[in-house]
Length: 247
Image 1 (tube, rainbow, N blue to C red):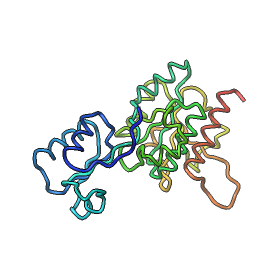
Image 2 (image 1 turned 90 degrees about the vertical axis):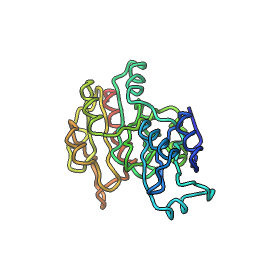
Image 3 (image 1 turned 180 degrees about the vertical axis):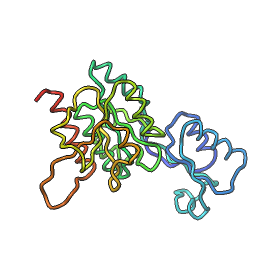
Image 4 (image 1 turned 45 degrees about the vertical axis):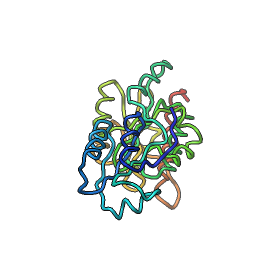
């Protein structure tokens, strides 16, 4: 179900956003504020997994669009998030081995949108992103995905490494992108597979990389040493497609 991206300001609007089931990404609360409605907001945030940030009044004033934030501002996702199980169920419904793209800290919403678009066109069953230090499903992401976010489920998880471990217990293999890895053409990327793409600057984190089964590199012959994260995701995703087709 789609929701327009919105900024909720004020205690009652934020409480109602939570209770209506909307996907709240982040809540900013005035540092030191702890009255009844604020405690309710904190409790709802914990239940839903929304990130809570305590900030100074100057920060809230700068963020506010109405000037009447009452000490709390929430950012509501443009789209609802899926569960990881929904992604696995989508693969099962198509009688296909799961193909999931996992993003380890993509911060640029244009990159996230482009990767969701690629995921859809490459036949991936879903995308997984982390709750912290990464872009969420904003309106910018939706626009950059060219509508693919309507068809490709995106799940948000607390810990990427733990999610990979759980999916490996369900029979999946994982390959992460890294310039120091094995040339992608030499790897067997068929079967139930997860493709891990790292942060635009830092790449795949050490803990996430250690939980992957393979590290794949993309052949590059130019004068610079890296591709944009969304381009790298597209190249590797279509190598997986090629191998699935048996070419």
